[in-house]
Amino acid sequence: MWLTIATPPTDSLEKLDQMMGSFTPDGLRARYACQADGKFQIIAVWESKDHADRFFRESLGPVLARVLGPEPSGAPTVTGLEVLREFVPVS
Image (cartoon, rainbow, N blue to C red; front, side, top):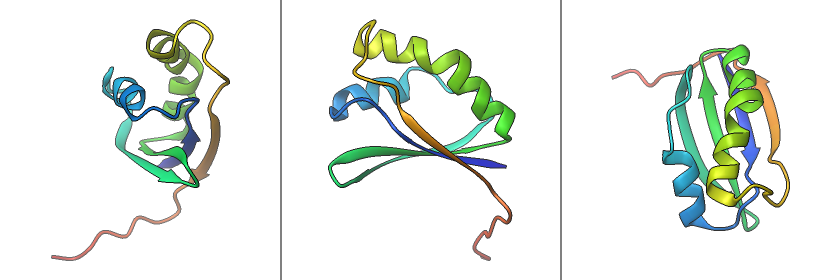
């Protein structure tokens, strides 16, 4: 499992909603939108690093261009982390 934390190149919640709702990438398990220090952060949980890499390499650019225009103000910064353990609350 792989986790990414990305800072999208927008400060508009409406544009963020459009980007997030445009499609569901292959291998995406969960995605959360947060805000820290006035900037959006997208935390995503992926089946694998390969799924995340494929999304950022092949799919994100067209989504950003469609929502933000052909020349968005910068690319998102992305940090990737391998998930070593998943702790799920016991019912």
